Amino acid sequence: MKAPEMANELKNDLKALKMRASMDPKRFYKKNDRDGFPKYFQIGTLVDNPKQRKRTITEELLDDSEFRRYNRRKYSEIMAEKASNAAGKKFRKKKKFRN
Image 1: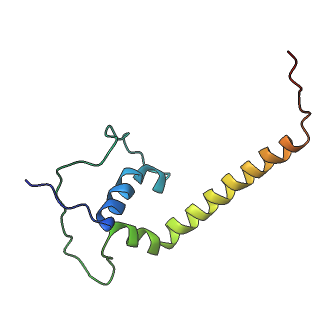
Image 2: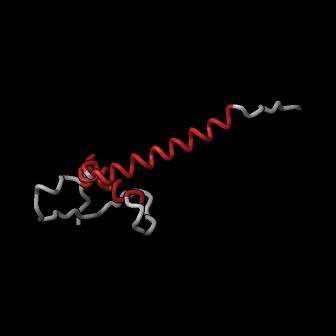
Image 3: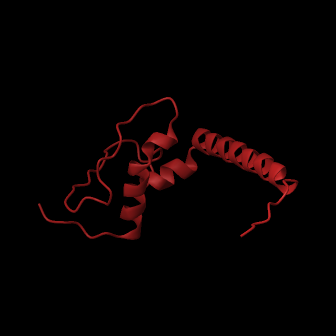
């Protein structure tokens, strides 16, 4: 098996596969034991209805409305939590350092 060329589309697909645990909160995936991308791997092609399938995994995820809705909700929750934490830090009394 020879090492495939790493194009941008292929890198994006591998990143999506690495972060698949954060895509679906109801599924459990084992932790990745590898830091980088694998050197040798193969890519298969699904033979299915071409109208429903996209060219890459990232295109399918961006087209999926349920996935996008979940990401928007999680992003707004995180930003609201950060804003509430930052609001409490404004009025905190600053300590002066003494030698």
